[in-house]
Amino acid sequence: MRVLVDGVVGRTVLLFGAGSDPGVDVTWGRGVTLAVDDGEGEEVEATAGVGVVGVSVSGLRALAFAGRRPEVVDRVVLVRTPIPEDDGLGFAAITAKTLLLYGRADARHAVWWQKRLPAARLEVNPDGHDDLLVGMWHRVLSHVAPRCKRPA
Image 1 (tube, one colour):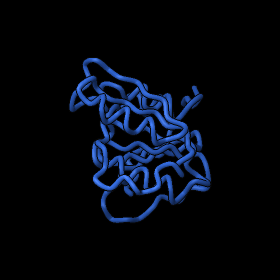
Image 2 (cartoon, helix red, strand yellow; image 1 turned 180 degrees about the vertical axis):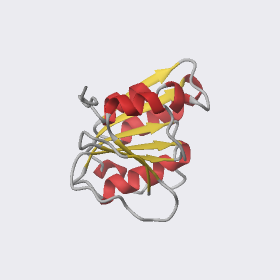
Image 3 (cartoon, one colour; image 1 turned 90 degrees about the vertical axis):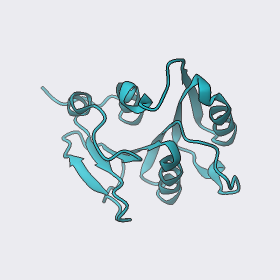
């Protein structure tokens, strides 16, 4: 993991599937630490208060991380994550509050995940397409970093 933004509010957001901050001003305003998965396999040191975001097929790596670290990951967002080829991966063990963000064209995938993740809430964006993460970054952070705001 590579840290992009050092936060000031004690909340960490791990982003899988994007190499840069999808909304610099929004991230700064929340005051969170933002780290991206750089493929190195190193995990960010965190003892609590971690939100995980997975985009497209990287959503599977995000869920794997949440499954390995349930003691620190309390919230997850999947953005347009497709149905995996192997559905016996134990996703029902993910108990973190999960937000599923999909475009209307991906509804089949969204419903599949909603049935398998016990604490999942689905939101469908009718205009959702490849840059759904950028357009919905404010919503993503409101889920994974609730009540976080940079002090004045």
